[in-house]
Length: 144
Image 1 (cartoon, one colour):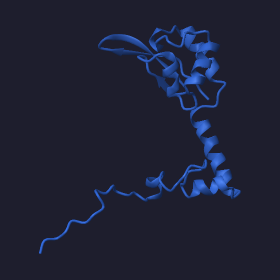
Image 2 (image 1 turned 90 degrees about the vertical axis):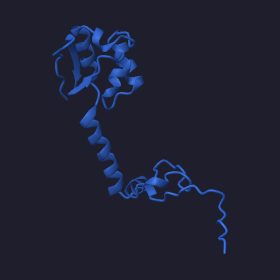
Image 3 (image 1 turned 180 degrees about the vertical axis):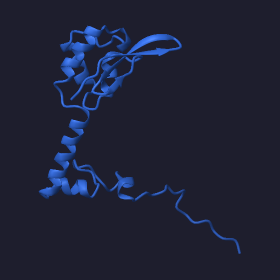
Image 4 (image 1 turned 135 degrees about the horizontal axis):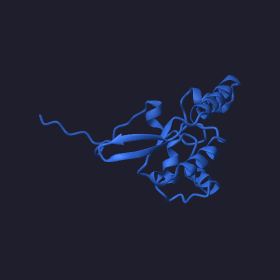
């Protein structure tokens, strides 16, 4: 995993800094906890743990962070499996389930719900069974 230092960008409104982690730009206008969720593999709860570990208020905006605070966040985030590595691991797990012929793997192959959800009324679009809603269900009587 790689982390890139903060980049300075010149714009019409002046200079501002962008925070980049693992090649993903964290939006400056968002609060830190929600900005970190741009990384695949970091949700809101993990973002809160990162902020707590770095001793930074999660409600601060990303643009208000100092370079030292950004480096502290990067150091903590480097310990997690994120982005491409995590996607490869998930894809590998699904492939393993398919290869060994597990029930969950078969459900993945058939593109059906894997975790026991009902399929009679839900997941119709995935199965290709799209039904249009009808009016009253009665045919209009033809005039002769």
